[in-house]
Amino acid sequence: MTARPLDRRLAVAPMLDWTDRHFRWLVRRITRHTLLYTEMVTTGALLHGDRERFLAFDEDEHPVALQLGGADPADLAACARLGAARGYDEINLNVGCPSDRVRHGRFGACLMAEPRLVADCVRAMRDAVDVPVTVKHRIGIDDLDSYDALCSFVGTVAEAGTDAFVVHARKAWLAGLSPKENRTVPPLRHDVVHQLKRDFPQLPIVVNGGIASLDAALEQLAHVDGVMIGRAAYHDPWLLAAADARVYGAAPGAATRDAVARELAAYVERQARNGVRPHCVTRHALGLYHGVPGARAWRRALAASGTSEFFTVSGAEAATEP
Ligand SMILES: Cc1cc2nc3c(=O)[nH]c(=O)nc-3n(C[C@H](O)[C@H](O)[C@H](O)COP(=O)(O)O)c2cc1C
View 1 (cartoon, helix red, strand yellow):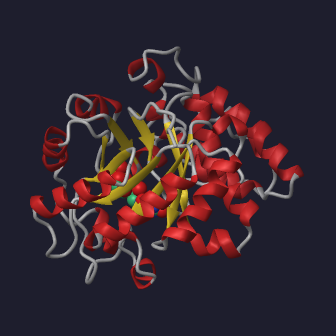
View 2: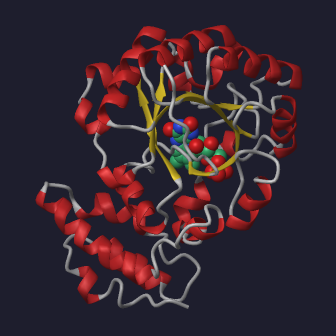
């Protein structure tokens, strides 16, 4: 089936426990065009768990991609179908997560050693849906870290019809390093991802890892098709405020942090009516005033967010724009 193209110049990375629908809602207040990703959802959770909880999202989160974790082509195809039917704009396969739990399930980064299986997974998903199917992976794992091995992986998986590759520009050590260490210890090699783009010019390649500002993202766009930002976007979501204008040449997103904070207050109240505790939403907004005067007062106000009254008392008012 033919996949609709997505503008992937800028994306916020999938992050377990962080990029849930409430964080994505917040980011969407700040940038209209940046592509958003869900947390990784395993095929087991989706096929046997509370499907609606894993798949629910706000209509105005679009464009939004569902990231799946799994290694069984039939299960992944079934989950991709569920995601596409629910309205996701892209289905992404996680081939980058190095956690023990994921490795013992034989998926995530360890799949880099099995390009043919990844190709089978992608093929099954591509046959099942008409939205793009993409793969997020590392530049290598353990001793399988040569550039040739990376090219062989990308070449094999591309043949299955992968619509884009998101490359976390560091290798992962599957034994010995925690997932957190695997995001800091192995050196960043953006140059390897740039080389990959030169060697596979026809493939959309998105670079990820250690990109902490819009300026840095724009520099990367000289080499690759897209940039994915993870931790920096979570800790300082306002860094995305200029993305619509500077990356997409569109009208700017939210005007001020205070405007976003006011919308957040209303959102918290709406969610509370559905039984969502304020903390589940506000914990994702701690970074909204990152680096500006009032940031501490804002965080303190959010920490006290047992009730939604805090906004009118001390939240948005306490934190002022620079
Ligand atoms: C808390 C946390 C959770 C993450 N969960 C996922 C995940 O579910 N799927 C995934 O592909 N990567 C996950 N990652 C990795 C990020 O997507 C990204 O590849 C990594 O943080 C490097 O990008 P950055 O330097 O911009 O943060 C996670 C990272 C963090 C910090």
